[in-house]
Length: 87
Image (cartoon, rainbow, N blue to C red):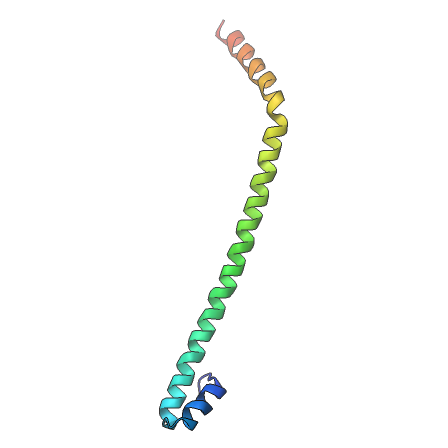
């Protein structure tokens, strides 16, 4: 027997559904619940991945901003090296 939602099956039987129909309906809804739990787990993992990515991006941007004053010096030094190599 497949996974069923017992309370739903009992309610359907009390409402007059046949045992076969109540079983099939309870199994079908249990399958949807199982699939929904899988999607929920994947969504949770995706949210954590996006959060980690955002944190890493913010850290890299912070490093770039803190180096901004020094980038001009590096650029000037690279320009001087390039000029020396072309002469």
